[in-house]
Image (cartoon, rainbow, N blue to C red; front, side, top):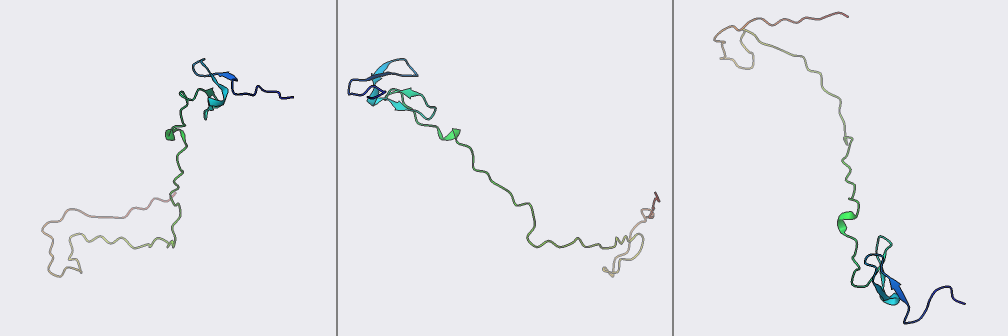
Amino acid sequence: MSRFAVGKHARGISDRSGFSYLLRRMKKEWTGALVGYDEWEQKQPQLDPRRKVVDPQALKNPRPDRVEPMVVYVDTIIPEIANFKPIMSVGQVGAVTVAT
């Protein structure tokens, strides 16, 4: 004994419009709704989740930072430029350290 209606004349009610359709011509949508063949819509591609793009976080061959001394030339001849002579003196540069 079968639990469901069988046969070519079985009818179903559309979940979207409420119209009666032949059960064999009805389709199930991606939402789970059983609708008529002329009401069926496929899932839109915008509803699919986007592919995750992961940016790399680490460097391939890391090197430590170089510590170079800070050299400031004020009112003196710069050794790299032999013919350079300052036009005017701007001020003095001093280094201040604060002990905590």
